[in-house]
Image (tube, rainbow, N blue to C red; front, side):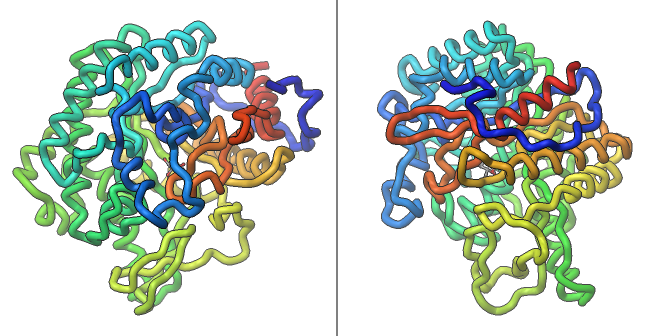
Length: 446
Ligand code: BGC
């Protein structure tokens, strides 16, 4: 493990970051399916089934081994300690927890984190649903709450900060509406029941976690500014609809106890009763931010955005944001989009918005001397500071991701890590961005 700064590529000289509050929580994020491997020691998930289908994963890979974090977690916890983060966001694999000895792994991981002085922040669902379960079934919500209760009973003596779900919007859109993620359904707007059942699962899990003594329960939702492609009313209407899907459909049931106009009618079950559960107050609200989206009226043809093909029949089309640097994924780099998102969110939800944490932010670039990643993170932290200065109550920031990992349908082609992983040898090598983040955290505490 080469963590001696002398062995790292030279650091660029950037002006120091502005000072964040002394109690600001600095962290990094990962998820179980993307790093753990040891697939033979857990039950199958919908992602195992999906990866076994031809042409689902771009490089034909699976997450069976991934970063072998299951066996190498002591080395990875040492990397976290050396990095100097306050907190580590990881996810618990539901298919592992229901397998014999599965919870023992998280017990060991949490012990190792506590011994290293790093606060464990588990996410209970990061897309790896046990095979055989289905978010279109209402019953999955109750099963999720029972699973949450079981994990909390085992880890709750050392874990106080919890995340129920990761990005139910992306899981609904990519997994159930467009079919580019597991479980591979292409239901378009008929996917909405999967959204409702995830939200219900969240609300039931909040209750279960609170009953188990949790003191800081949140959720990690994906959000970003939605810009109309032009002032044309058709482009504006399309952008409004996209904004509703990304920034309101999941936030409003959680924060306001209601769906945006026109959506409650599309949801299954006793929606009013469910909303009372879904709106269980949160201690904090997690935002995953990567980039804004430029949206126009439908163009009558399939469009492509960030590697995802969008069918012609959708009531919007996604356009390229010109004139911006792009990550290796083709995502535009727009740091001030984070300020815009947070200030508009605070204005929209007012005192219904609890303290915010940025639960993911990062980018995919090749190479160890990853100056582009440093520029991305530096720019986004300055933009985040601008949001704080504008009065938004943000309490923490987590980089996605600690390690290069299995990037879902992209396989291993995208590298989001502060630490490079050689998948042939499993050697971990910190990148320049790791040294930069470490130095930035030290400077904050100096
Ligand atoms: C997900 C991560 C993913 C990252 C980069 C987020 O949507 O939560 O699992 O790796 O984006 O695509």
